[in-house]
Length: 372
Image 1 (cartoon, helix red, strand yellow):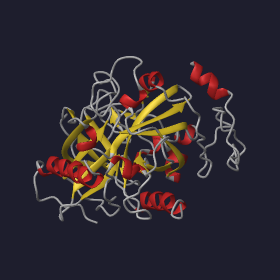
Image 2 (image 1 turned 90 degrees about the horizontal axis):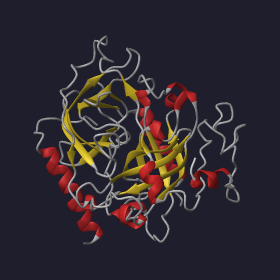
Image 3 (image 1 turned 45 degrees about the vertical axis):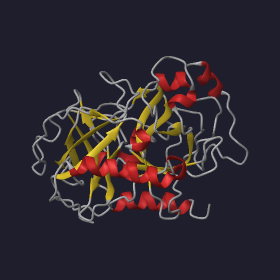
Image 4 (image 1 turned 60 degrees about the vertical axis):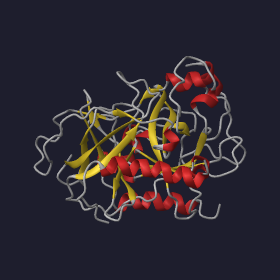
């Protein structure tokens, strides 16, 4: 199947799912791998401190690289084999189920909606989605992400949208390392056994991030629990070509989210969305893509901060960062949010509305590679 036909097929499946939600809504506007890492050197020309007093390999809170502009992610061959991918824990940002009870602008909590498995092969149904692997002080972890259109390189995007907490620890830490994107992870769904071939679960390669941006608000206020910083919990990173690949990420997978909507009304409620991700905590195992669909309602974490979207969904850790897409009035699809927070047990998910701060993050990464 050609890339053009594959892209059309994949987004047709997205649109079909969202059409079912109904019309009338409008979005306005310590392993051997770890020991190898400990001794890994930076590539020639890299600067481990990024202008800070920290060290690329140091997790100590006083040395950990954390500022915007400090991100560094040298390729370390052999880090992400099948065993470490299987061992990666589903990353999440948990809150109490009644987090918004005292906030007057929040809509009532939605009823739980069981997550539904996406159809195989993923590249023909949700081809822009994939898994993000990264290392944290607690060990290997995993989130979800979405390939998005890059206006600087139409049809040749290397940009991935995810949550801020999937690349940066927030106020208590810094940038995570060994950040990679695996598009259409376990595309055919039959590769759960231990060992096995990397090409079976990562058929389109492993793409290393070479730059990432998140919001200043996430860096200064974000927290792993409680929801602090959630209205600004978004990130964009650029990837370098996977080994053996000659085209861009978008050309390789055949699709990308066609646009990101930064103009959603702050009072909009009931917007129909589809949410995609790879939940990795029980009862899920991280090897299958799931989706939830339903109306996104308002959730307020604080009176002085932007409201979030919230939707009923039982996905859990590992689904963080996954894209939220809606069908606009003109029939086109747009990414309007990403999974940020959810309670335990998992009954709903919430994500930030993408406004001026998100646009700045996106534009910064796109502009950085505009001449590449």
